[in-house]
Length: 217
Image (spheres, rainbow, N blue to C red):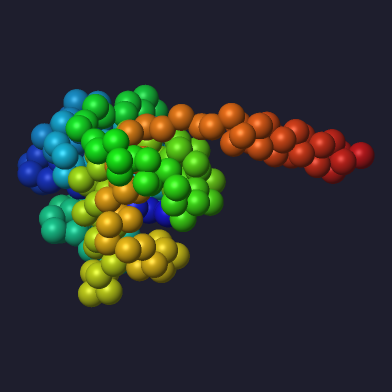
């Protein structure tokens, strides 16, 4: 499931700092994100996503979509318009360079188990555990806040909410309401890959290596 994450980059703080931040001096601007996304992009709020360690291309695209009015937001669309594309790119690079840290949270063991049975609905894009997205336009989900992911999935299920990723919308619409909770708790638990999946991944790596060798011949 791509682009599940609809960021909210330090709303009030961003507005206050937008006039003073300049390209090449991104830390003061990034510091304003702490109010919502936590120190170094690790969120302490259930409904606010962690953003540290997410792909730079993903972060950039989401912020630019807000700026262009292509993606729904409660505050970010208005706030991000005050930033240049260069500042947006610098913010994305700053957070992408920080380490991803799964957040500890209370989760339901039964829901985690149920989610493991239907993870194939999401694994093609996000990976079996949510830790290995299939490209740099897709966020990782392992250890992200379950409540946040629930809110975003429910937004995708509402056709009146303006969101650009049609594949994500179609996938979310196919889920039963209880399955939304199961998957969110599963990914939030930062699950580990099974032995079988690890073997499959190693086989794919070997196949790619062989394909590259053939291309060089």
